[in-house]
Image (cartoon, rainbow over all chains, first blue to last red; front, side, top):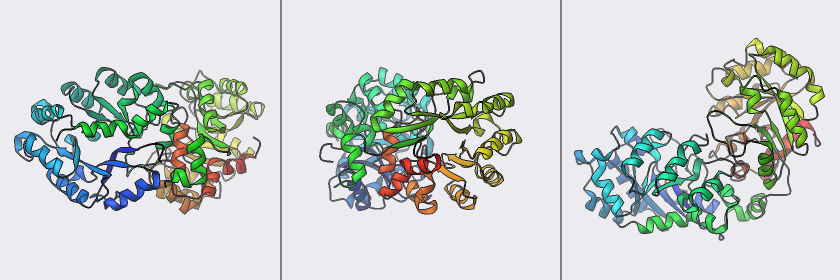
Length: 252
Length: 270
């Protein structure tokens, strides 16, 4: 789509323990992106919940190593600092830069730890200082935990989402209202004209296009964004400009 | 180039927001609900939303008629009369209120052409579809060959595959619209159609966008057995239409889903 630049904020790839159809190679994902007109994608490892963060980070780096397009960037997973499973912030960020990783995530519920300042305060503060986005995909549906996390880390750039298909406005809007660093990935926001409602109330720059590939196809949320009724300038922000800007602002 | 530039139908929707094709949304609701905020749950705003993309018909059951016994189907009929160019209704059947069922079905013919079928919600009413309390309504629908839009979900004890399978066999004259196509139990959805006496259609609310599912059902049961729906005011028409357009199926499959199947069942002018 030459009239819009799309940057997919929510995409997973790589083989999964339980099977499934995530893209096995960068080429496979890029072919799907081309089918729908997606320019770039932020990719985390699809098997992340089932394996250690150390392993999934390494596998994702290897997977991204097969990409020559420059259209894919990765998301690495955090762990509590006290067990020394990951290096400290400076070294971690250096490795991220070398591996084409642009954002962080965490899977505390799958990886069995408590997401709070006590466990990851140091790395989260470093991520806030360097403007590195943190994707809260493992928190999906756990709104109490999202609230607690956002309250504890208000200076971090936090990307939240919903997968329930049950319009989350009552749960989401208080966060958008109170926390300027919370961004919402619209992959599951199937609410009629809900993209426009949120953008008009909280600003288009708070919303990010994301597909939640491979659960959803990447074309799924493109048409409702294109015909959201928002001005083209706002649509451009949501489609990809804001995420591109956030990732460019990260200082690894 | 992307499908939005190369696929004729997708291109029209992408560029113009609509196409020269009617859309029959076979699964809608209306009105507020306890667990969710709806900004567009009243008829006027819903109709405005649908007209943007070219919905020709929405068949809905009012949330309040399903969830609040004092709200009767006649009020939904009155709403249809305000928007005759687009709204049609399913008469909501609550098996806990058999006297309401009999009273409302006695008025069904008077509510035509707006009333086109019945709506069952077994999971929420907590009465399995195989329960005898649905029999009166099922016989009524069978005598008139009416569609019954029945909520279904994979693994449900009230409206999963076993209940649907038994009921569609027992009522071959009822046209069953399996809402959500037994979501998640795709094997069951396929069996339901294949083993039925030809009286089952899979209604697609919540499916468009799920990667690969429309392709699978189209290949297994045929697009002639699929119906478009959105649960409006739950889901955006552009999301659901976009989900169908984004599937790797033919344009004829899409047209079957969007309108041709509904027209074959209910006529071209209903």
